[in-house]
Length: 115
Length: 178
Image (cartoon, rainbow over all chains, first blue to last red):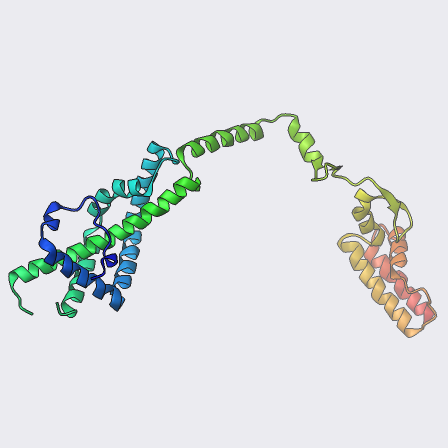
């Protein structure tokens, strides 16, 4: 399996998830590959982006980034730092409707991909 | 599908993972964008905003202040070559209509009078024009087809009731000619 297909796990990931054995990871990889190959990943990405922009989530994130930049001084900031700062808030503040819609689509895909 | 509960929950787990992946990608995008904006100084940062606020307050104070500088500025606009142009043109030249010496800045009003100004004179001019045209058309011996001097003279003659007098004159001339 090509590992390049997987993004490296973000720092905040639960240990429990990692404890789910390699089967889980392999399955995830498989799903990912299928998503990419079928083009569904692109569709989902576009959908997520649109929804998150619509509901103002992106603006909130950008404000949070700007706040952090103001604190740290704009010459010092790194991308990783910004990601680290906004990820927990970002994950938590996704509206439920958006989350539900996305999960639905993903589940349908998994089912239809006959896994 | 083998609808075992374990399968379903792992499915849910799986889709959650995929979802979080997607969200993480978007977060990374946003962070990258903000980072770029911050480093390039494109966004109005706190310091920059403060600086600009200060400058704009200064500028406003300057404008609102009714100091003498304002007058000189509006009267004499300096162009990019450093030349100043007085708002009223002061060159004198000859009017091509009546030949008088006119100040350039007063040329437009002069021309109004010279060629027939306003509604009244223009109406007169048209009447005299049509009359002159009639005259010209019926019998050509009028080499100088120049209605405007006529209207000028008519203006000078009939200042009291210009319309009637003018018409009378032209009518009479017509009759005389015919």
